[in-house]
Amino acid sequence: MAFSEKIVQRKALEDFCIEAMRKAGMNKEQARITAEVLVTNDTLGVTTHGSKQLRLLLNSMKNGGLNPKAQPQIISEGPGWAIIDGNYTMPMVTCCQAMQTAISKAKNTGISYVGVKNSSHFAAAGYYANLAAKENMIGLAMCNVDPCMAIPGAKSEVIGTNPIGYAVPAGKEKPVFLDIATSVTAISKVYAAKVLGKKIPENWLIDAEGNMTTDPSKYPGEGAILPMAGHKGYGIAVLIEVLSGVLTGAGFTKGVKRWLTEFKEPVNQGHAFLAINIGAMMPIQQFKDRMDAMIQEIRSAPKAKGADRIYLPGEMEWEKQQASGEKITLPGDSVERLVGMAEDWGLDITKIFKE
Image (cartoon, rainbow, N blue to C red; front, top):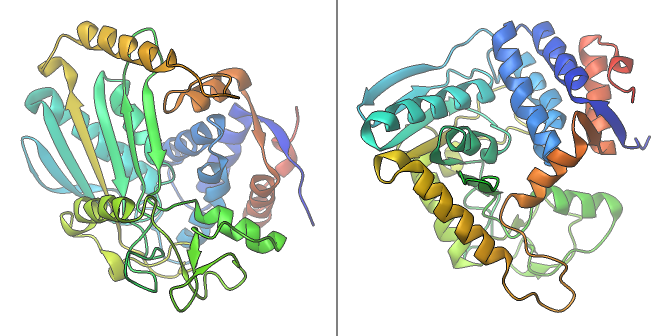
C-alpha cells in the first residue's frame, strides 16, 4: 500500500511521538527532548532524519538495543573536554547533553570537545551544531556509523558514511549550517532507486568485484557506496572515525554494528561535539557583522546561466521552516512509518493527520 503525503501540526506530531516513547518506557523529559530533535528536523525538510526514524529507534529499544531507563553519564573530563557514556540511552538525549556540556566548558576554555560512546543513531548532526550557534558559538557535531562505504583501492565496504554538521551564528542573517554524510549520495537514494527499479549514476556504487555499477538491485547485500569527492571524502570520514570512535572508546569501523537491522544488540556508535566560543576571541557583535558581510558577498556573486539565486549552506532549510510555520508536510514514507508505530504501540494515528 502506497501512502500519500500528509500535513500535520507540529505540536500534534510532537505529542504523538512523546506518547509512543512513554509507552516504550521512557520518562517524560527524555521523550520531550527526543521529539523536539526529530520534529525540528521535519520542519527543516530533513524528513529522512525526522519523526520517520522513531519507529526504528523504538524497535531497537523494544529488542534491547537501547535502554529506556538509562541515563548518559560523564565518565572522564577536564576543563575543556569530556567523555560521556551514553549507556544506550535514546541517542538524542545523550547528544543534547553532550553539546550542552561542550558549550558550558567552552565558556571557560574558549574551545571544547565532548565525545560519546555506547550510543546509536543520533538523527541529523545539524540540530546539535545549531544548539551551539544559539549560544553565540560555532558548533560541530559528527558521528561514526557502520561500514557501508568503500574507499579508494578497496572493492567492498570499509568505513561508514560518517556524517558531520556545523553551524555558525550571524547577525541579521540566519546561522550558516551544513549537515552532510561523507558519501557521494545518501544511501536512502540508492534504496529508493532499487525499490523503483531504476538505474543510478555510475559514480554512486560499486558491485561485488569493485567495479562501478548503475544497478542498485543487489545492494546492500553486495557492493558498497562510494565516498564524496573520492579520496577527499574518504579522508574526512577517517577523521570523523577518529574523533567519534577511536578517541571516545566507542566502536570503530567493523566494531560498529548496523542500527537499521541489528535491533537486538547495542551498535556502539560514537559521537563527537565541539564548541568554539566566539566571544573569547572577538566581540560577538563584530563577528556577527563580519558574518553578515561574508554572507551578502557570497550571495551577490554573479549567477550562472539559469540560476535564480545563490544560497548559503542551510538557507534552504531555514526557508522551508519559516514557510511552513506550525504545519509540517510529511512525505509518504514518513507517514507509513508513523502509521506502523501507531500499530506497534496501540496509538490513535488520527490524532495527528488533521489539517
